[in-house]
Image (cartoon, rainbow, N blue to C red; front, top):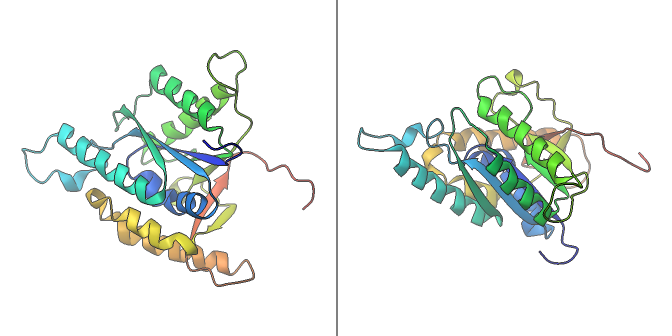
Length: 240
């Protein structure tokens, strides 16, 4: 990483999650603001997130894993992000200490200004909840002076990105990010994941809806697309 370069880390439960929920944020910060972005992908989602790829009985989970891994790598490249796969199994996600150790090492190497991950509640997908808990556990461990290996991190804000069904997840966004300038990149990245092409229209519409809301709460150029986030920790300010 370049000296003084800002950075971010995304903790994604499955191969496509970081694209649908935070692709705009990633592209905005890498392409426009010069950040280093690193995605930590806990699973490839081959068991529960890839129904479209099981076209016949001959398709195996191992083959689907390869496909989803390649899709996620291609999407990350479009967004300007590095990606690390922890190779966990989804539905249900089981986190190991090795996965934690690898992620803490990444956090200490990247020294993120902020972290993006899933919301704290999602009763329809416990993998997402576990990914949220995992992100906070790794953040805490990366702050521990007594843990060997690398410099401790500071206290990066953690932003929960918008879940698929907000009404089930107690998600109350407090941050709307204008991604109008990089929407084309997010859309291109989404199309790198044909294994979940049913998500394309939904997240296109959501970005437009959030853009409409964001545009009504600010001055300046029209906002066509936005992403919504909810902070985990209070923001420290010197003036309002």
